[in-house]
Image 1 (cartoon, rainbow, N blue to C red):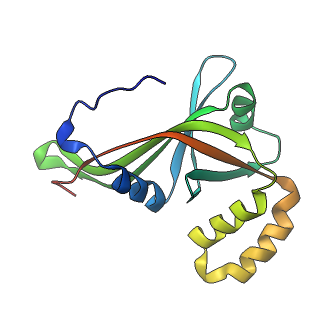
Image 2: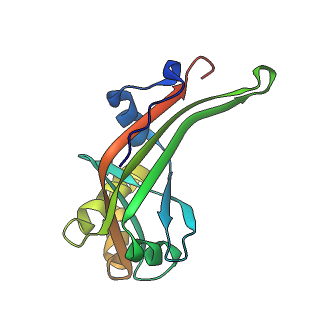
Length: 158
């Protein structure tokens, strides 16, 4: 993967802050490429744990799965604290982009689903366990092994 130098060095974010942005997002945009050559970006719920991003989807169907079967190379974008500052003709934001390889996981599936429940429904873990059991067989889980993480922010306005 080619390394690009950040143009706006004043907006560079260090690795620890990049991880915090990645962990704190309410959703991310998974970008894939299909056999037809078209890119496809789709918002997904996700959980981050120990250098990996997990997301779930319906079992064996859909545009996302078709593209991931074609190529596991992905990027994953999270934007937090987005605020348009009209009078300054700018936007305050924090963003992180992870690049890596996504693959279906069976061994980490249950762990990943629990991580999603912990992130999105922490007050409903018991109900979440029941939901996991009910949806387990009709759900696929993918894991992104992060190869590179970049981030930047316009914090002066956030």
